[in-house]
Amino acid sequence: MTADIHHIGGAPVIIGAGIAGLMTALHLAPQPVVLLSRTSLGTEASSILAQGGLAASLGEDDSPDLHLADTLAAGDGLCDEQMARRVVEAAPQAVENLIRLGTPFDRSLDGRLQLGLEAAHSRRRIVHAAGDATGRELFRALLGVARRTRSITIMEGMTALRLVVAEGSIVGVVAALHGGVFALPTRRVVLATGGMGGLFCNTTNPLSSFGHGLALAACAGAELADLEFVQFHPTALDIARRPMPLVSEAVRGEGAVLIDEHGHRFLTDTPGAELASRDVVARAISDQLAAGHGVYLDARHCLGQKFARRFPAIDAICKHAGIDPAVEPIPVRPAAHYHMGGVAVDAEGRTSVSGLWACGEVACTGLHGANRLASNSLTEAVATAAWVAESVAGTSAGWQWPRLPATVPIRPDPSPIRPIVSNALGIVRNGKSLCDTVATLLPISVCETAAAGPALVALLMAIAALRREESRGSHFRSDFPGRDTAALPSRLTLCTAFENAVTLRWQASERSR
Image (tube, rainbow, N blue to C red; front, side, top):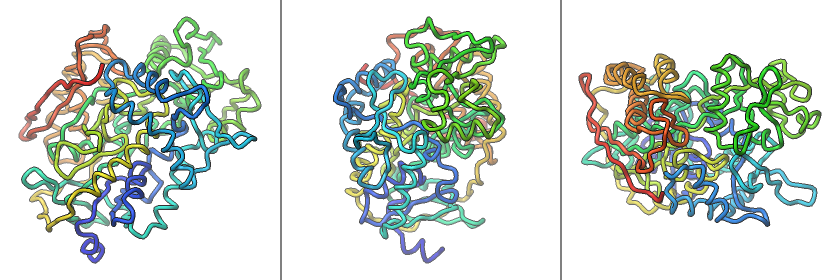
């Protein structure tokens, strides 16, 4: 281990080995790069759970302009239009790059890519692999190439504990492996740690995805953006398993409808019905559950016996739980699924801290605004990874051995925080609950305990949600149910955190609206 650390001194370090991390590493080749994974590769990445595909304007009736219009509409006025245009224009080429890397996208009998339809898309533009296993197949293809790429050093089972900053710049990463603590010297770090759904009791994310990258960035002084916007997927399989298996939006795209226990279809009067934006559908289901009803996704009439062929992974999960989607409705409920907020980055993925980049769900590029358009997330990760890698490669590689901090953080544990977050930062929020939550989380976030990092992330999210006194996209306040047309994207920076006090710098930032 020590020899490996000396050998890689100064190489870029990518924290996180999902699709965003792997793509960034591959784009950096043949430049040496170190890839850190907290577990064995592929065992806890959100990427492999992704059933949806990649959105790209590949159809003859489609265009980047149409894809952009749908993205901006879903983002509810808070997207960075320039960034969104850049991503959607890069999407078709990103799909081609993945094909060259060996991703087996689904094709029709004539060899053309099959294009699916998902909520809030005006055209069929979603490419899938193995039906409902796109993330798994994409990850498998990229991992195979990465393992064959000699310039990529993969360190499995290594947890990043802290980013070391000197004079405002990254100088290293403190990490733990097998009980030992090490300092990796580098002036270039890429966060690709995924989301924060694991802070919630009901989530489709791996329980290890609890915003660890956000905590690392915040403690390094990086600017964070739009933390209040958490997307809840409307249709997670309502069983005891955690994370909750996802019943892909593509099932509704094929015509499945939402019904209550009496067979009543309760979204018929909602514009877009089952294919309305995710926040609308999630709130409608939440209202049904709060009223004591059961909620089910009924695919019997649109798919029936074809369900297993079209959605083999979902079919297998359902049958393992004793449910046959071909002949009975699937019980569903909303679950925390995707974070539109994250570490604020520019067009090249650079954060406000010199030497620190972010890519994938941990980053806030401005693409998603207040609500992510379905299947834009994998597209974003793949497209932006190339820009991040180009920026990293063009930055000086000078380095020195960083000193270990006087107090080394312990491995984080979000377990005590989940009930607090689930109660206050769910689908419907209110000011009193958010205020109480801030008071509860503050003392936890500044203590040297395993819950401190997760509590800090939850605290910052609660403050962001408290300050946004409106309802927009995925953020709904029962005490402020209207939309404030003057409201802007929100950004905050952790200045200090000590002795039951947190000092923040807050600002509203202009974007195309």
